[in-house]
Amino acid sequence: MENTKGRKISTANLALCGLFTALVAIGAFIQIPIPYMDYFTLQFFFVLLAGIILGGKRAAMSVGCYVLIGLFGVPVFAAGGGFSYVLRPSFGYLLGFILAAFVVGKLCEKMKTGYRSYFLACLAGFAVTYALGIVYKYMILNFYTGTPITWAVILISCFPLDMPGDFILCILASGLGLRLKKSGLSLPDPD
Image (cartoon, rainbow, N blue to C red; front, side, top):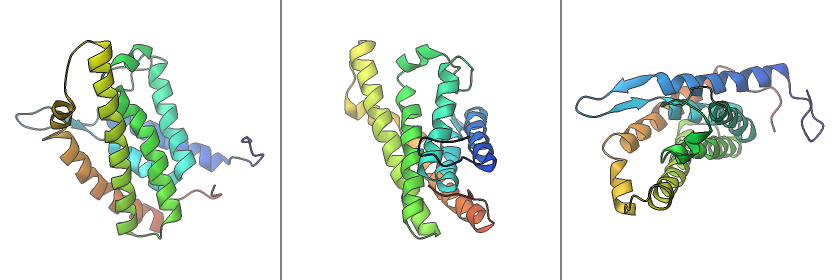
């Protein structure tokens, strides 16, 4: 298979991208219940790992495929699937996953291999995900559903579960990503 620049995309690349597409989908259903609160999923963890292992372009392609599969109606999102999902306030986080995978991957490609570098890349992915997710949520709630809500309320709604939990996932993904890279799990032909 060839990409737009005429270089071949190897079978190993396609398989690894497909694996991370599946892992992000599976991560939506790995739900960790938190007492007296809601549940927490592992999607973001696999998005970060995709960036570390696949690099920017392939990670974005992998996570983008996951989002497209869900939009085409396959129930791979935490609350189902289908095109109407774009009208859910949480859809911005899914878009943020695509951009986060790209950002994490690009930073990992450019920075020296190491836990600190991977952790900083994951934090950048964290910032991108929440920036896009919060803006999208604000827009949908205020301008589509007609639910007036302030930026502060949306930001506070990310606590005490989502942001702290995703911060912990940044720590874990950085460590596991580094171990996987050191063990030889990487793509044979870099971008």
